[in-house]
Image (cartoon, rainbow, N blue to C red; front, side):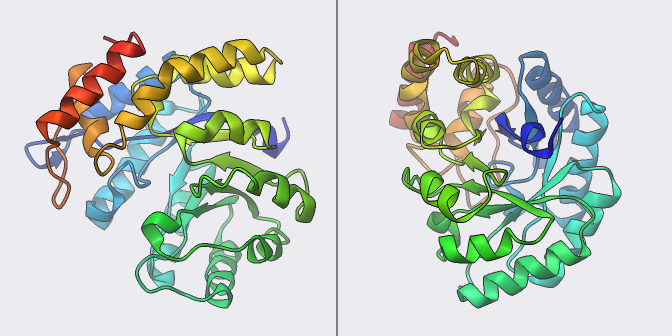
Length: 295
């Protein structure tokens, strides 16, 4: 299997379950099994959905270790290893490599707003200390700074920088990148609502929030697309669209945690400053779950 095929399809941006303020590792192990049993192609611990900003360094590392241990080689693991401090990100990169992650997801540095030259230097430094492939996480809505196509093309010349999780919702980007980067550069959507048109534009998969609670439907959608069954992939996408929208009616992962609690996956607990979602938002999540026939 070539490296592009290994990191394509429906990957789940795993939530991190909490109970009484602590990480609920029992629920987390069950979530990993639930994902794999329902056809998810790969798992991504401690990203945005995993509430990485409010995990301690020790928790961050242990969540990755538990994910890798529970998956036990059944699907690839792309571990979150980003930070707005290059030194801190190096620590996370080295740890994820040492404990057996298959790849690394590295977010563009947030808050300190580096230039494109700064982004290039940051990712080059991380790739030079890594032994595993790196996927750029471009999410300007949270990081403030976005990466240009030109910077990404330069970074793609490094043998270990192999792809992007693109959370810009720019559906022209996959085609533009195909014009300036090798077709082997992996392009993964970071937006559930536009994941299917992203595939049509040249993308290779999605790192999904919704897949936490609908892994079977989303793996089926991606499988259908790959097999040329466009109608089935469209039908599934239509079925899930109200849920995609509902899961972002407030700051993620608040709505997702509520949905997961309704499905007995985990408690709805988040860590401050993310709070319990409003009653109107709960109704919207429930409506999305019902429309998708998940409850």
